[in-house]
Length: 327
Length: 168
Ligand SMILES: Cc1cc2nc3c(=O)[nH]c(=O)nc-3n(C[C@H](O)[C@H](O)[C@H](O)COP(=O)(O)OP(=O)(O)OC[C@H]3O[C@@H](n4cnc5c(N)ncnc54)[C@H](O)[C@@H]3O)c2cc1C
Ligand code: SF4
Ligand code: FES
Ligand code: FES
View 1: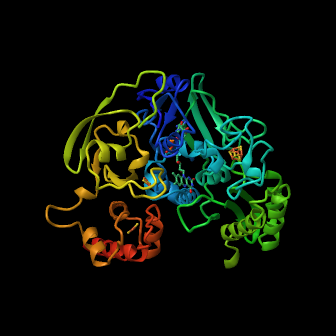
View 2: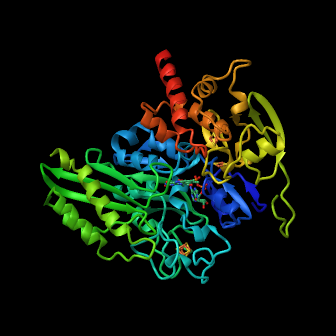
View 3: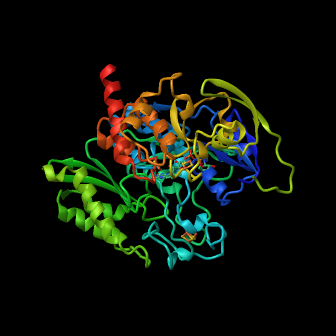
């Protein structure tokens, strides 16, 4: 690691201020890795662990507020999360390892960077790391790469599991920065690459994520998180699916599906989701939906397998969420 | 060694760590990880270094009782914290039940991953989330073993987990 200064602010305003010229650090499990690889070279680290942002509490509207500095472990095993938002617990526990989750925080999880190997390798060109240098993934290794929403300049994916569940639940992010506090809808938090893949979120310089807000409805009766990866545990998703549903008898009233491992952000297609509205719960409904969602998929030599894999994973997750095989 | 840059190096920062029961007051540079401090500053080489990137679990220690990867933790962020390494788990002459179980079940071959495996297993048992062999396999997935001693590692942990749950 290159030398850097260490700063431990005790209030948000000081932290935001320091953050305009340094990098925030929470658990450090992603940032320190990238600093060791020389991908990130902050001159100052601003430690967010002493701002009192680690709690989890119920909100007045019946939802739940997850402190940005609460660990992934604390969040996944929190009794209210387990009881009312089991999909979130399931998704978090599908990611990383117990040791990493003990350090990883909710805010850091949102802002973890892609696992594209060219991004990590400073000897390789990469538009995200060095804008304008090129994107070798398109013709090279692209197993972990996007099939939806990518651009000519970058086909990287966002690697988080937690975020896929948060997208299905329609969470909101609360941030605090030099210009005060604001809320960002989860759908607007991560950005697609376009011609500026180096800009990954709508967060501004100096803004600290303070909390993730979950709406009251956690879909605890009808949910599934299904992750496909190269080994059974401790591996990033090739494809993951968070599915939640609202049922009336055998009739699907509402279905939401977010995909991980296929785009630069957790992927949802609200237009395709209309095919899950007032439909019979069966494999045909789910298959039609999956086909519509994947219609615009664009593959690369190394990731063609992802379209059929995603289709099968979507059908499987929706079947599980709607208890189809038990109907 | 960090590369030198144009500006002078930041001053070392004094911190105190309680390691295996004894207090160590040391001065660290901001970029020293807990793993660096244990092995290079305090010369406790019982905690092993594998990948140095959070991918293998060899460096697992207990931080205030919780298992973490010491290679991805900065020492300056842990002033005042309590650290237990494999060297601190035995009770005087008596090996820790997990050490005994690892020997009994032949749960190691070269032994390089073992300090991390056992610290991780202590974390697993105290967390109390594992109920079955399947759970142990899943919740030990953060510790790789290049020798492939996995089956015996799970046997050892399962035995200790069952005996702990029958005594509580
Ligand atoms: C080997 C390995 C395997 C993994 N596997 C998975 C997996 O399968 N699934 C998965 O989802 N994840 C996986 N992860 C990633 C892991 O979940 C992330 O590293 C972790 O969530 C990051 O959280 P952190 O608190 O450690 O972030 P840090 O490393 O501290 O920070 C990450 C980034 O977020 C910024 N930041 C952090 N908190 C805030 C805040 N409150 N406000 C503003 N900015 C902030 C930092 O400046 C930094 O840029 C894996 C990691 C490793 C090393
Ligand atoms: S996919 Fe994106 S991150 Fe990977 S090499 Fe191309 S530009 Fe870089
Ligand atoms: S050395 Fe820390 S996880 Fe491999
Ligand atoms: S015993 Fe050799 S690496 Fe596990």
